[in-house]
Image 1: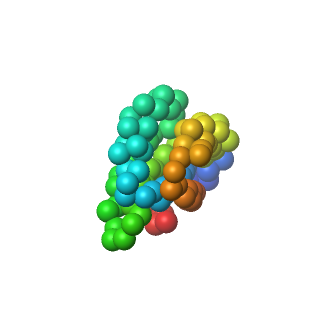
Image 2: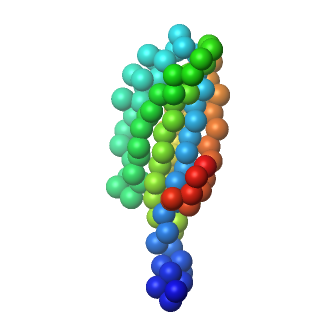
Length: 106
């Protein structure tokens, strides 16, 4: 129990930001190319994805997970927003972001 308290005080718990981008099926190649050209994130942020969720209908979802230490939340969020903001004005795009502790379902 003491070690869990120490980790919490030191900000060593991991957080995950899950970004979901809903895009028109016609635009999926544009987004794939765009993501391949983004500059790398700082070393303390682990990016997983993008993953495609090929749902039925006219929209697909692109899911990206970003994991980092809780103590780096402000810096990580700024870096992630810079990448997401680079998509501003892209056709047929809707974005949502959810934050949770690593290991939580969300």
